[in-house]
Amino acid sequence: MADPVTTVDSGPRKVTRQVVVQAPAAAVFDLIADPHRHPELDGSGTVRDSPVAGPDRLSAGAKFTVGMKQYGVPYKITSTVTAFEDDRLLEWQHPMGHRWRWELVEAAPGVTQVTETFDYTSARSPKVLELMGQPAKNAAGITGTLQALADRFERA
Picture 1 (tube, one colour):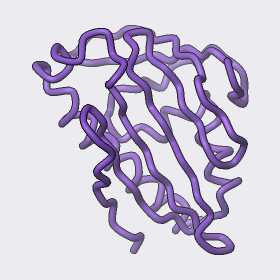
Picture 2 (cartoon, one colour):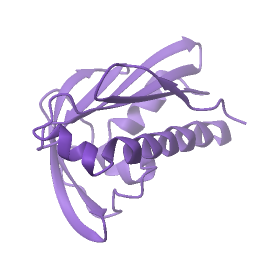
Picture 3 (tube, helix red, strand yellow):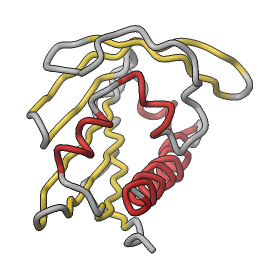
């Protein structure tokens, strides 16, 4: 069984979870950096398995669009990559200002510590996100995503 997902205190208005994955950082990064595969990663149930517009591999400044669905309402979101270090760091910003950040550290050969953060410190309406319960919903979604990621590579 994969290591459990743990909570990381990364400060106010940040929701961070971490897991150890039995795979090289490059293999994990390849999955995260391909926006067409984001529906495979999603543990929240909000990313729809619909056509994704964007490059096959994200890079600094790249834009990509994914189909989403929340509260029964389908919509599309175009995000912009705001931080990128091949095989180590990928962050994109949502149009409303919040960011999703992935950090990978190869802890040992073939073993990677994966940290995912929902950072809404720069969101246009952080209080609205809090009133809507987004931090808790995103915490659950991140936990689901990271557990599925760990399970995926454990089976590989």
